[in-house]
Image 1 (cartoon, one colour):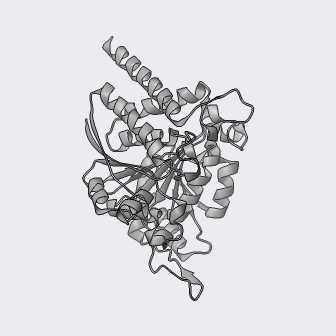
Image 2: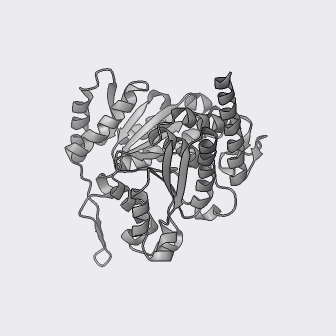
Image 3: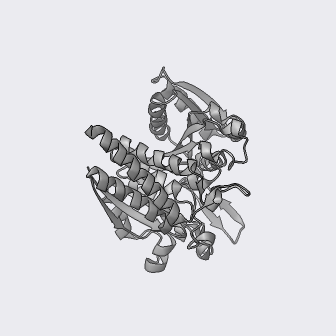
Length: 368
C-alpha cells in the first residue's frame, strides 16, 4: 500500500502530538510492508510568522497533491489582535474549504480504563460509542455576509444551508449508521430557525432511503443535556457545523479529555485528519500534551484513506492496552490514583511498543 501523507503540525502542541502519530504510522508501514511518505508544510501561526499568511499556497498545493493530510492544531494567542480572516484559525477554515471535505467524523468512545477520569458516573459512560457526523462547509462558519464594524459596534454572521448540502452529509451519516447500530439522531433547532426546518425536512426525506436505520430528531439544547445524562442512547449523531463543533467537544467529558478525541474530514478531494483538541499553547514544550487523540487520528487515516482496517484496529487496541496498564498523561490522570504519569513522547513510545507486539503476534498467527 502506497500513501502520501502531508503533515501540517501547526502551532502549540501540534508538532509534539503529530510527531507521535507519524511514528505510529511509520511503524505500521515498516511492519506491514507499506510505502508511506511524509512531507511537512506550514499552517496557522507558524505560517503567519514565516509567510504572513495562515495558509501559504505551497502548503495548499502539498495537501492537494497528497493522499491524506494530518493536521496537528492551529492557534496562538499572540495573533489575537489580527482580524478573524488573518488569524491562524482562518487557515484551518481555508484548507477545509479548499480540500472540499464536507463530513467531519468525530468518534467519542468510553474507555473503560478512563471511567474515573470523567466527571460523569461510570454507569453513565459505560459502553458509550458515539460517532458524530458534522457538516463542515456550511452554516455560520462559512455563510455570507459576515462582518464586524467596530465603529458602529455591530457584527453579523449568516447561517445558510442548501438542500443539496444537507442531503450529502445526511447520506454519509445513514451509510455509517447502517454498518453500526442502525440509528441516526439528527440535531437541529427547528422550533426557532428556518435553516433547521430545512435541515429536519431534508434529513427526514433522506431517511426514507434507509428503512433499516431508525431516525430521531433532537433539539440542540435538549441534546446537550441528553449527551451527559444518557449518552448510551446515541449511535450516529448528525449535526450542522456549529452544533456539531460544540456537541462533539462536549463529548470530551465522556472520555475525560479532549485529548482523547480524533477526527476525520471526508468527502472532498483529499481527506483531512486532526485531533479535536486545540493548540494549547500554555503547555507547548512541557511534555504534558496527550498524543492519544492524534494517534487515534492516525488510525482513522488507515481506515478511511488506506482501507487498512486491521491496522487501524491494531492502533486502537494498542491505545486501550496502554491505558489498561495504568499509563496516563496529566489531562487524564486522577488525583490520588495509582496511575503512572508519563510525558508526551513516553506515551507515544508505549503505544508504539504495544502496537509492534500486536502486529508481530498477528503475523506470527498467520504464519502458523
